[in-house]
Length: 413
Image (cartoon, rainbow, N blue to C red; front, side, top):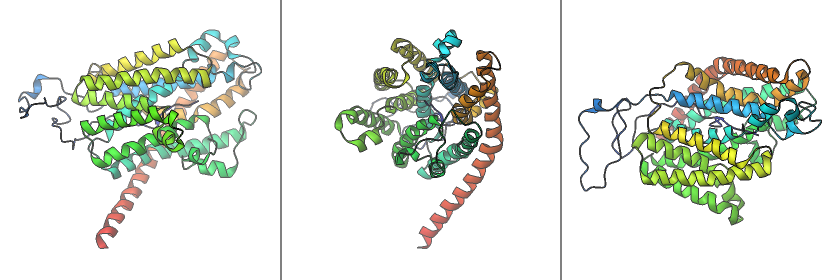
């Protein structure tokens, strides 16, 4: 079971939702000014309205997305501890008896927490499009490396050591497999994940690779729309094509969630239109089918109607974000909340369930779940403060020097 972000993930995506300076051919006012609508299909584009102050200024950061990311991570964590089919089996190694017998109300709610993964994917599409608008492929690559790897490396080492000290719940990997996990590419070599939640990072990485093509061409409204349509078509054709490579690249299990995020960001940046609503509607239709497939093949604990209701409510909320209805939410503490999301997601599952195995008879089950989650929130802050931030600075400095050396060598040759 995954999740996210950043990931980001999502799970692996940062909540640093800052509007970058646009290099697109479409006109747009300064980042701190109001959103620039798409030009009408006339022969001559009318000049922009002179009175920029007539509309409210758009925020330089979407604080509300930070909060949604943390909420999604908490949904996933509660699901893993108290809402999975594995935890509801008689004699399971986590609780020793069905969790639905221990805390039935919590189980009914937690059984839908896996949808936090799909929420991560949608947010990832939105935030990645926002954060790399106007950036070069080099800047996009560096931003993803420094965002994903420092906390991830910590997560791999932390989980490996913790499972060595807390045996009996999860099978420990061989050293060669743990070392390959440090690349984040283990799924491509059919090597198990150190922690099961890392599967979402493989989905995120494939999205980044595809979107890098559009970044290299230069992000514009038209190019992102074309990308959404082409990727969506590939994702629909992949399952029936019998082409493993197409299915691997198109990622039909996650594609439409990322596409929904991209369409929502275009709404946020350029305003709504029928084409974007059509892409979003198609993403919802394909998404609800994928939700049902996941329930039937993986989760087995929740219902399709409830899952679709939660997913629909989330998409409607994101529409409100895209249309500017949440722009006034600028609570500074949401920045910290967003910073906790990725480390929490990376570290909570395998180690958290191993801790519950050891502590399940020491306190009330609901209190134990709350205490374990609180502990991983504290760990998430420590990882962000003492691993992510200094690690990102060092990596960025080293990568910038490396790319500068490449440019210098190319010029000298």
